[in-house]
Amino acid sequence: MLSYTNCELCPRRCHVDRTRGELGFCREPDHIYAARAAAHYWEEPVISGNFGSGAVFFSGCTLKCIFCQNRIISQQNLGKEITTDHLREIFLKLIDDGVQNINLVTPTHFLPSILPALTPKLPIPIVYNCGGYERVETLRELEGLVDIYLPDMKYSNESLAAKLSRAPDYVETAKAAIQEMYRQVGSAVIEDDIMQRGLIVRHLILPGELDNTLGVLDWFAETFPKGDVLFSLMSQYVPMGKAKELPPYDRKITEEEYDAAISYLDFLGIESGFTQDFTSATEDYIPDFSFEGLE
Image (cartoon, rainbow, N blue to C red):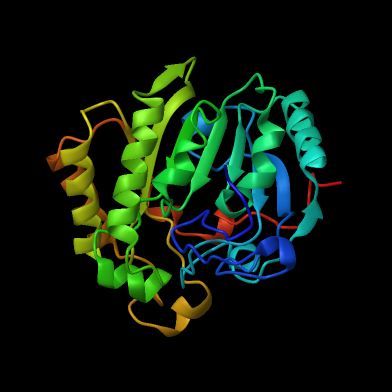
């Protein structure tokens, strides 16, 4: 049973009582705050399709990535309060608008309020879009409710995770979480070019940290049967927030770094998934967090 009291929803396990106004690492209360709910066209093609993914961006986060492009909601906690009943209405409105799926973006710290909005089961897939830093015990409560998991695997290096995301236990925690996600949803199911069930693991190439990327690729290739899980290698890194002041994170990745990552992906035989063009490093992927769709 997921609860805000003695909160253990995420790996931080802050043990605060959010029902009494106490705040933990995410700095969020015991009710939902969100910043946008609308068709989103910048996910992987099997997620966005032609009609967009029905993405609901929740405020707050269990990580503190210095390069986060959504930092205005993830770290500055911009958001509008909504109830569970209102969230259900938002889901139904997005479905009426024709979206391909309902995409829960960074939802972990609000799960006690979100899960009731997912029942009765909706007629389109539910996507769980997260940073990979999840408790297996929490994920088990989602079994049967989530159809598609869309986690990051940000790091293969614990010291880098500590420095950039304040999560020294990220690597082993994310590995266990992503394997639990795979246990739940199994091999990718794609119908008419749209994912219906399965797992996509994302990784963002960081400037000056090619070894980190190669380590993530090694782990992925060693862990999952070929073709069962999709891999999404992203090159859209743009310096944001504190990263602008900390070399080498104050620059975009180089073409040499990009080419090396793509070459290693090919070398490992990871064929099922997606890569971004080198030119993808723009701010075009950052949504407008103006509370669209939360009326």
